[in-house]
Length: 78
Image 1: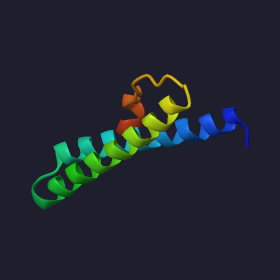
Image 2 (image 1 turned 60 degrees about the horizontal axis):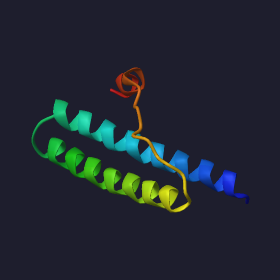
Image 3 (image 1 turned 120 degrees about the vertical axis):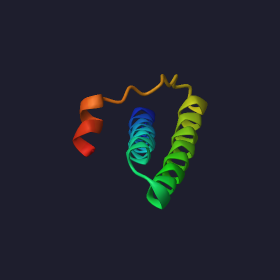
Image 4 (image 1 turned 90 degrees about the vertical axis):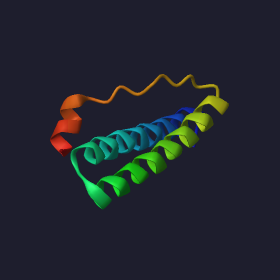
């Protein structure tokens, strides 16, 4: 696998984790009680996964901008 392919895979993993983190955070905000708490925990876990992939990308010399999550995409999941 060449460097470009690895970067593409790492970037896709980063974006997936960042999206999941934001989705769980939004869901946590619209729920209550134990479910809200669990969703918030999942959001934090996914954020740590996103940070992992961001660090890997940066180690490879790839500058990672903050992910812009589509509100439309988030709304479709909600």
